[in-house]
Each structure stands twice: as C-alpha cells, then as structure tokens.
Amino acid sequence: MSRKVLWAVALAVGALLVAPTAAFAQDPTLDETISSLNTLWVVIAGVLVMFMQAGFAFLEIGFSRMKNAGAGIAKILVNFSIASIAYWAVGFALAFGGAGAIAGDHGFFLNVSGDPAQAASQIPLLDVASISPAALLFFQFVFCAVSLAIVWGTTLERIKFVAYVIYAIVFSALIYPVISHWIFGGGWLQANLGMQDFAGSTVVHLIGATGALAALLLLGARRGKYGSDGKARPIPGHSMPLVGLGVLILWLGWFGFNPGSTLGALGNRFAEVALVTNLAAAAGVIAAVSTMYLMRKTIDIGMAGNGAIAGLVAITAPSGYVEFWAAPIIGAVAGVVVVLGVLAIERYLDDPVGALSAHGLAGIVGTLCCGIFTSPRLAELNGVGDPGLWYSGSFHQLGVQALGIAVAFATVFVVSYAVFGAMKYTIGLRVTPDEEDAGLDISEHGMYGYPEQFIPQPEYPGAASGPLPVGQPAIGAAAATMTADAK
Amino acid sequence: MKKIEAFIRHEAFEPIRTELLDRGFPSLSIGEVKGSGRQKGVVESYRGSTLTVNVRPKLKLEVVVEDKDKGLVVETILRHARTGEIGDGKIFVLPVEEAIRIRTGEEGETVLQAHEEEEVPA
Image 1 (cartoon, each protein chain N blue to C red):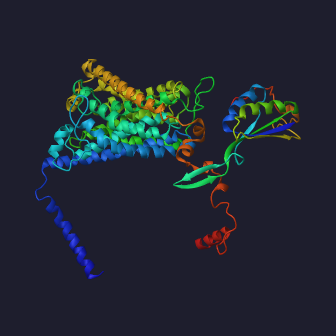
Image 2 (image 1 turned 120 degrees about the vertical axis):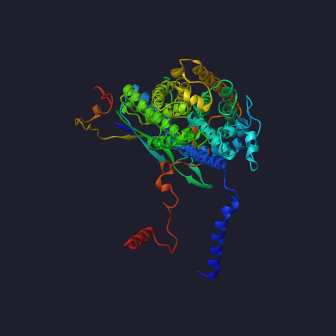
Image 3 (image 1 turned 60 degrees about the vertical axis):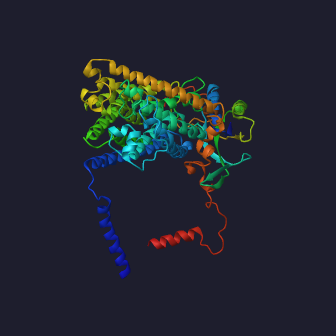
C-alpha cells in the first residue's frame, strides 16, 4: 500500500472520530432520545407493513390462473407507486394535517426540513406521539397502500389495467385519507363519538373490501364462474404454495401493522399488541379449518389461509384495546365467519380470493369486538371511547362501533361506486371476452407470466435454429467441452 | 366404426361434451394441443422486444362411434364450434378397424358408446 493511501485512510478515520462530537456538540436530551427510539420502531413497523404488498401479490397470484399470473405484479408495483406520490402530495394532509371534523388542511406536499415543533403544530397527532413527521407519513401511507391492495382482490382476471391507475389516485388522495381522518386523525367519529379502531379493521380492511364490493358489482363475474343453470363453479387458483407464501408474508407484516400502531416503543405496549395479534391469527386458522372440516370433511388449504387473514383482520381494531384472553375468541369468531361468508357469497358474487369475507366481514367482526371486549385499563390508556359490554354491561360502545362501520361503509361504497361507474360507462372497466379467455398477461401486458406454459419448446428462439455459422462449435461439441471442463 | 377428430376452440368443448352426453355419447378424449393455421400466431412483447409465437393453443377432441352415428356427432361439433371467424378449427373423420374394451376383452361396436351398466362414481 502506498504512503499516499495510508495518509488518506488515516485522515478518513480521524474525520469519522471527530464528526459525531461535532454533530452532537450538546448531548441529546432525554426527549430527543425517546423520540428517536419511537421513530425507529415506527419506521421498522412501516417497513414490515410495506412488505405486505408482497403478501397481497402472492396471495392474489396464487388464487389466479396461470394466464393471469404476471398481471398481479404489474398491478402491485404501479398501484403502490401511484399511491406513494398521491398520499404524500394530498392524502396525508387530509388525513392528519389538522383536527377538523371532516378533514385536515395542512401539510400538502409535506416538507418538514425545519423546526419539529412547527411540524407538530400542523399535525396534531405528533403532539401525542413523539415521532418524526416523516415516520408518521411513511407509516400511515403503507396502511393506505394495504387498503388499496385489498380492493383488487375481487376484480382478478378480468379488470382493465387503467382502472387500477384511476382508482389508485382517487383512493389514496381522497377516499382513504378522509375515512382515516374520521377514525385515526381526530375526526368526528373518533373525537366526537369515541369510535375505537386501533389499527384499522374498519379504516383499512373494511373500506378496502367496500371498494372491492363496488368494483365487483359493476364488473360482474368471470366468464365460466356461473353455469347456464346459475350455479357457481369453482375456478381453482393455480398455486396453493404461492397462496401460502402470501398469507405468511401478510401474517409477518401484521407484526408491523398492529404493534406499530402504538406509534412508539416506549412503555412496551407494542410487545403486548404483537402477542395479541398472533393469538388471534392462530385462532382464526384453527377455527376456519375446523369449520370447513365439519362442513365438507376436507382440510381446505385456501380456507386455512383465509382463516389466518380473517383472524388478523378482526384483531386489528381491538389489538390495542383488549387483554390477551380476548384475542383467541375474536380470532376464532372471525375464522368461522370467514368460512360461512365465503360459502354464502360464492353463490352470488365472484370473489376469487375471498376479500369480501376475509377483509369485509372479519373487519366488521373486529370493529364490533371492541364494543364487547375493550378493557377499562386500555380504553383509558388510549383515551378513546369506553370499556366494552363485557366489562361495563353497557351497549353504548357497541352502538358507536356499529355506527362507525355503517358510516364508513356507506361513504366509501357511494364514492367508489361512482368512480368505478364513471369508468365503466366511459373508458370501460372490463376487458373483452376474447382478452379474458386469452388471459390478462398476454392481452393487457403483451407477455406471459409463465411463458413455457404457452410457448412450446420448439418455438423458443435458438431451439430450432438452422445450421450454425462456420467456425462455431455445434451444440453437441459445446456439451462435450462442458463435460470435459467438469472433469 | 369411425373416429372423429376435431380441432376446436377451448370454449367450444363444454357445450359439445354436454350435448354428446345427452345424446348417449359419453366416451370421448381431449388433449391440449398447439398448432398453426390460417389464424396467425401470438406476438409477445418481452421487456420491449417482440417475440412471435407461431402456434396457438387448441383443443383436440377424439370420439369413436358407429358409422351411423358419425353425422350426428359431426353436426353437434359444427353447431357449437362455429363462430364464423378464422380459427374455428377442423374436423377429420377416420376409419377404425377394431375396438376392444380392456376390462372385459369385448370387441366390436358394443364397446363404443351407450353404456348400459351403472356409471362408477369418481
């Protein structure tokens, strides 16, 4: 090593040693340290929730046929990206930029490079949660993206790609932010009525499923789903291993979703929420598998996955409000409801992944469970609403929860139906029957998700090539060389 | 005895199968095949480059019937498989020399269709 390089290394090391002392001329205060700790946890939780996009992608692709496998990837990537920009530009301000009853009005195109106190004055939630504004925006955005991903579960294998683009903008800039302001951001349902929804059984899951219902009603069923006699026929998805992978990724992501909604690490509440979440998911699987076995004498793979999701969705609202013992009960109820829901809805509506049941019905179950199982200790800790029926003997909180569900459902349904309806009668919502038969991969994206399934080997470029140009070894010779090398 | 081989669109199969079953012809075979014809192939665009696949997926349907039933089966296929567009496919009728049921060793036209015995549930 030359002397010059040694000098450079010595200088760099010296600079590194000096830099921290320079940056923290004064030691960080306790408040700053707490804020950093909380911010660290919220960003990690947000990253886990972002990974749920992979869960949705695999879950939906596994429940699709091979000819529609690639479309799901393009959808998730484009949707998530559009929502990222729209939520930062508009959505976050409506949701958290002020304590108005209907919507916030500060923080469009959020820029908080300056004074944290000034940012906190614009974003009331930051007075309560001691985290950086960027962490709050990122964490709330990934929730919006989860809710948006839920919408498309009912629309697989037949919707036009352009519908994703248009609805993603409306949803992440308007629909989700307004509802989340009402219930998360200090809006009228939370502040005036005391509706409890810790991490979004209603805000995220029910309204995602509501958008899904609006889209499905306008789209109609996939070709071949209902026979000429009107009876439903299953259209099996092509990969149960992918469904399983998706479910497990979602389950993992939920440990960011619920425990992260503490918006802080201090006090260790997040660990309790994580345990509550896991208990409910486990009970959801057991209940769904058992219900299916009692009804059909099969241990259904897809229903096991639906059970896990239903348990997780149902515990999302109560996760910060209930004690450990209530979690398995809530998860089990959701596990039974999701099976009955899928079997009942299947007869009339073509919902390929069971989103209406696993996110919609289970979201309703979870939100109502707050009104039953919320403990006095935790209602007080969160400062929202009253203890549930089990402790107080009063139906008040249950009534508030039911009202909140009805309001959120009605609002989102009307707006979504209008948006999808406008698309249907202008640019069209659904691909042509020919395109649907060929599959969205080739008709919408021009390529196959699984090419070898559709392109025979002899058709591959190179496989059926003519005589080789002079000077190149024949394929057999190349193979012989490789064998020789291996020796 | 005649063997009827039809190359059809996938979506034509289910109505054909249902009607043949109703008319007493439960026995048939299908295979997923790929072939070329006047209907052009599929052009794929893979990461910006185009790739022409010169064959398209079709369904090959095979039914062996007594000579007298040939017309009925052909007519059924024609009715359900014809859309009028290029790519509807073709029907070929071939003579069959022998037919043997493996389970019993029976020979001749009795093994072809119209099963009198009870159907075995799947």
